[in-house]
Image (cartoon, rainbow, N blue to C red):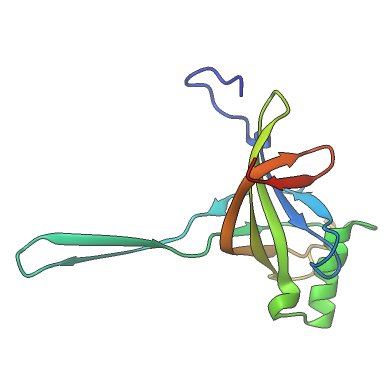
Length: 164
């Protein structure tokens, strides 16, 4: 990326995609999230424990647990697959494996290349409704789990390629 030392990386160069396909299997239908958000942050969760051993030394251990991301608000739009999936999850009371989708996080380069990782995410709506003047919202949380697969992302085709 043509970033001069000390220059801030523009936020739009870090992109988040979730598979909004009806079942989460077969053909993936990636949708970029963040259109309604002025802040979208993946929370990196570590559990840290410290204790003092019998010889007076402090030992610290850190283990990483599941990362998560709150997408709030998320406005439902007509004929938009992620909105349709969120409504289906809410109305049908989907749970367990029916909530699992592929998540891709991308760091885009100005030259068109990208670095990315793919991981499984549970997509769980946190509420449904919204103010009368704003439209229908279904904010949700993504909880990432499983192995991260590194690769590259093609923005034009919304395709992840592992290991590149």
